[in-house]
Structure formats: C-alpha cells, structure tokens
Image 1 (spheres, rainbow, N blue to C red):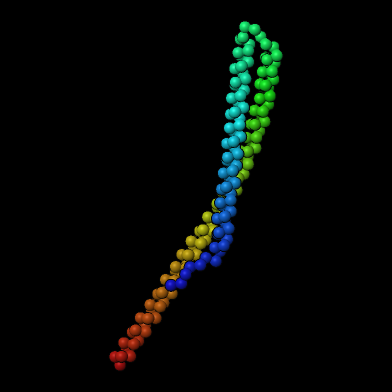
Image 2: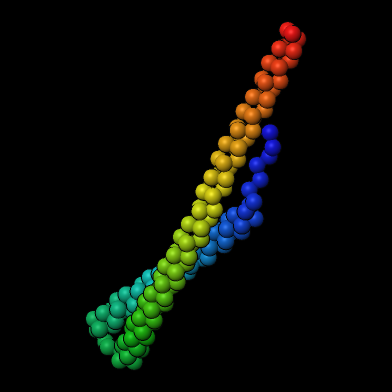
Length: 152
C-alpha cells in the first residue's frame, strides 16, 4: 500500500499558522478591552470617592472653600477621563470585532482546506481499494490459469 500525500499540505500548514496568529491577535484585543474596562471601573470608583468626599466637605461644620473647589475640579477632570475611557473602550471593542471577523474567515479557510484534504484522502482510499481489487483479480486469474495448465 502506498502512502497518502496531500499535495496542498503546505497551504494547509500555512492556514493553520494564520489561524493561530489570528487567535493570538483576537486574544490580545480581548485583553485590551478588559484592561480598558478595568481602567473605567477605577475611574468610576475614584469619582465615587470624590463625590463622597464632596458630601462630607459640604456636611462639615466649617466649610473649607479651597478644598471644595479642588474637589469639584477633581470630579470634573475624572468625568472627562471617564468619557475618554468610554471612547477608548468603544475603539477597543471595534478592534476586537474586526479581529473576531478575521479569525472566523481564517478558520473557515482552514476548515475548507481540511475538508479538501479529507476528500482527497477518501479518493486515495478508493483508488487503493480499486488497485487492491485489481491485484486480487490478477492473482486469482493467474492461480486459476496455473491450475488449468496443471490439469491439462
């Protein structure tokens, strides 16, 4: 029996490598989204802490105007950073979606080549079976011919 060799194996290998690369890029983009969301959570916690401090400053028996002004300024800056962070998250999610689409396309191409390989292997097996059947027929004919020659 001969050995099956897929003639486009090098292309399949490249497709596998491309899929691995796309998976890594998708994972990196996903990590980036998670990092950006974590930064947003930190900013929201900072804003909540500043708002709590503002309430405490306003409820204090003696008002420290300078401290209240600094606190409100900090709240406004934090709100601005929160808005910037929301934009960063939006961009990171867009990139993640692009990487997901790319991964799906590459995965589909690799799967197509795997199906082609499977079909080629099935065809190879059929050819091998046909060749084996032909050999058996020849052997049977030869043996039958030999018995006829011996009987005559």
